[in-house]
Image (tube, rainbow, N blue to C red; front, side):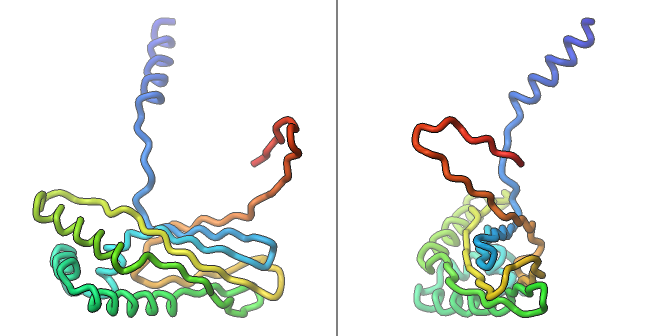
Length: 186
């Protein structure tokens, strides 16, 4: 009996004192809306992705220091080149073999990205032995098809790899004013 109580207390303590944190990995979330419209949301370690795209021959520290100190117009030019490269390497192939056109790309602006690189550069100077985590950057795009999307094959830039792929089709239900809660099943 005493062992059982100690075991229950140990599980309770671990469960209430465990610190949850978000997975630090590149992720792509596909959300199918309205049958023919798919939203793509990337959460990327953009420093790592840009390093692999713009200066893979350099160390991460060399890359961060170089691009953090770069004049803004030069940085923006390199960033736009990388974004075009990423867009060209990203594809959704529909079940019938047709490639879906990706539109409405939304990227972080150059000033925001360079500020993050400057912050990372400061971290490398202050604590060179530390392994800093970049704040994930969100990039979105959309795909529209002429027929209902039943399956897709995803092609991604090698610089994004590895990527955790999450996909779903949300269920939507209207709740009437002052109605009791609706049961949601998963």
